[in-house]
Image (cartoon, rainbow, N blue to C red):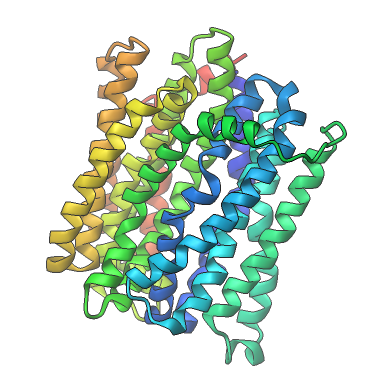
Length: 477
């Protein structure tokens, strides 16, 4: 299973490294530079607000279905039509709920059409993820990898035309970006459905309220996990935009830093999408999960610690390279957010294992404390430090959640602390940080050459510190 994980995660990262960063920085970033930080800040706040309520349209079905199909692939024909019908009902409820909530948040009426369009996109995202959960649950990991990049590839083609052809770019509006995403999501979802359809028997579309209630009862723990985790990761953008007099501009600055964190988090999300069906199947077969858990943690931290260190020292240069309005404050926000990446990457692996084990209520308690901590910190820090305050609150919250999850895993699986493993990670982190500082401070030449050199040394250090063990990887079976 380790070999399967490694091969597929490398393929998955390879595909997405080619597509998603180009989308985030060649399309999404250019959209913000084109429409301005205020317009993009409003869009960013609405994205976060509608995502907070997406639990209604998803209700944990994606995670529940991924785990169930991975363990019992013969259930696909029974689950698929009933879950699709349930998702249609939940999507209608979701659209009915977002408008009263938007009214309570005092959004002006002129913004409501944008809220509707973004809400429809959130439904399509949920539907696409559900389709992909069937694909990965069937063991079609590489097909799922291609589907994960398809929507962004379509966005690159459509929005690239709108942003880089002068006659279109002059009149570009944020609404065009939203509608382009809608078309890309529809296409990717239909493609995923056609792939899943090949593995289905003849579908019987029947409304069975009893069966729908059973699915809701089984999936609600996953729904609670999704809601709580989403709440403490997305509420900051909404609070920034609603609390501050210049909230839309501050939200735009926060979005600029979050974009790079989002790009980096791609690695953690891809790890989780592969690990969930693997962990689920291994636990069902009573196989030991420790080697895969250890391997995935070392790999993802070899990446995240290096990225966080480079981004901290080169934060101002990166911000000013990417954004036409950027200054040192933008760099500060970016630097704080990228420090968060180390903890966030770890939670992707840890929460995936806890989910596969089915101990969701215990994890929910961790997330609930995380929410309280994050909201309290945001309330005080945003008023004092704006977007930078929200980034500081994120560092503290994510670090707490990761530590609590690791303690829970140690208890659930009777894992003893490996002092040598901790020493390896700490040594690597110190060496990478010192290297990045030394490169930034003393190396001659342009800053981007310093960044490239520091990153290359980090790869060597990951091998020397045993974060990546080539001998172990060659021996995987």
